[in-house]
Amino acid sequence: MSAEATRPRESAVGKGVSALDNLGYRLQRLPLHLVIIIFCAIWVVPTIGMIINSFRSLQDMGNAGWWTTLFPPHGFTLASYQAVLEIDGVPQSILSSILITIPATVIQLTIATMGAYAFAWMRFPGRNIFFIVIVALMVVPIQMTLIPVLQLFHLLGIQGTIVAVWLAHSGYGLPFEVFLLRNYLGGLPREIFESAEVDGAGHAVRFLRIAVPMTIPAIASLVIFVFLGIWNDLLVALTFLGTSQFRPFTVMIAQLVTSFGGGWQFLTAAAVLQMALPLAVFIFLQRYFVRGITSGSVKG
Amino acid sequence: MALDQIITAVVAVIGVPLVLLAYIIVGEQVIERLSDRLQTWIRPYFWALPAVGFATVFMLYPMARTVIFSLRNNDDNAWVGFANYNYFFTFPDTLTALRNSLLWLVFYTFFAVAFGLIAAILLDRVRYEALAKVAIFLPVPISAVAASIIWKFMFEYQPVGATQTGTLNALLGVAHHDPVAWLVDSTTNNAALIFVGIWTAVGFCMVIISASLKAISTEVLEAARIDGANEFQIVWLVVTPLLWPTITVVGTTMLINALKTFDIVYVMTNGAYDTDVIATRMFSQLQSNHIGRAAAVGVVLFIAIVPLMLVNIRRFQQQEEQR
Image (cartoon, rainbow over all chains, first blue to last red; front, side, top):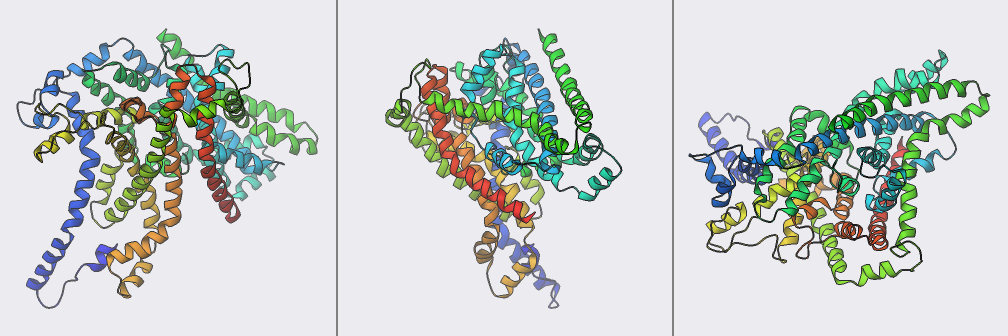
């Protein structure tokens, strides 16, 4: 916006002067471009470096930095990927990640949508207090809840199962989702709900036929946000599945990194596999993704 | 085994929405047969029950229980007063964790927000804004676990004389500087970890600040320009104050993130060489079965977050008044 305003306009003096002006203007802006390019490089190069390293042999990684591979002989190999997938439990952990993430996302979002409808379109004593509690719960550190929930799972006999992690993720995610969906649902036009009521539609119909279809855009952004949050989660899975055979990929990688003293470098392949899904989602669903992130600006 | 899991997952994905659907339809059938007064009384609670129930079982009840745990011994059979807290505030290792969390709180928050603000303002002035934003946002979708591995390579250290395979030490080599053991040397390791945190957070801050930057009317800026303000003055005296509400929202979120920091420290150093933070401290107490002490750490973390929680509630109430 400001660039346009300060830019010298085509002057009547002549093309030569104008070209000179233009050059001066460009030179003036050179530092701006330099700063931006350095900024971007710091934010991109580390990731690229690791991806390149994941395609190199362990020996090459020990002998020279990743940048040397940019020049021939490249010596790319899939050895790291092979090695990672051959580690006992790694394929299972990738499967577990999927089997934890999808149901946990579905469970919490269906419950949240229903709860949000109540808070948006029903009046009842204590509604505001309840809702303030929900706003407060959004930022409660889950460390404050881990021990009793762990005991609860032991009591129920589901400690160390993926069902336990679905429930835990749902419990921790709900306050934020109810908050967000309630704001969205509450913003829908009142007339639609009122005319449906006049036509004799009960709350079940109004919720299923009007509220849910109209909330799909918000739910879509939220699905991405919640899905990736669980896919990338470490703490919840580490606490409830840390020693279980069903531990997800993030926990597996974290434990492998800490247990390998030297030679951990081939785990780059694991990291690339782990981040492939989030990056693909980001690249292909950028609009929804960024909307989900920005709507989550109040979530700690 | 894998097949069992897959079946359970499929059942849950289809079953949970169906069960809730049945709950709504059957429940409404019953409620509609009640008297009008009873209906208006009972219906909201019926609808809010699943969500409120989850919040109660997984958050409210455990929070109360954790407070009780923190005042009891490890076997949960005797009250010990504030002994667990006393331990936390006197033991040297936990004091280091407290100091590090404070460092995170100050430096992570400040630089994540400052870089986010700078990126939003600078990128607003170039034509390749969209592309540059993707670059800076790239670390956001990446998990802290993967980011930690990315940066373990950046910080990799070999003794003096050996070939430096870590990017940063290779750059230092080009500048004829001795390599630094970033993650081991206790003068650099906390800064290194905090930087990784900043690296993953700037994209988030930038996107949100940028959204409200675009909402500032160009007329305000034109007016400032006509009054003779230079670009620097415009950014500092006009744009930044207008962005202040957004900056405080983002800043609050970053403060909360800073206090909750766990993943990066756990994966990169596991708290070794004086890099522990409150959350990793709590986790190691939990693993060594010091229930009372772990609970006390959790409560301390919670108390630190309470002021930020109150800020959020206040802002929520202000928004409600404007609805």
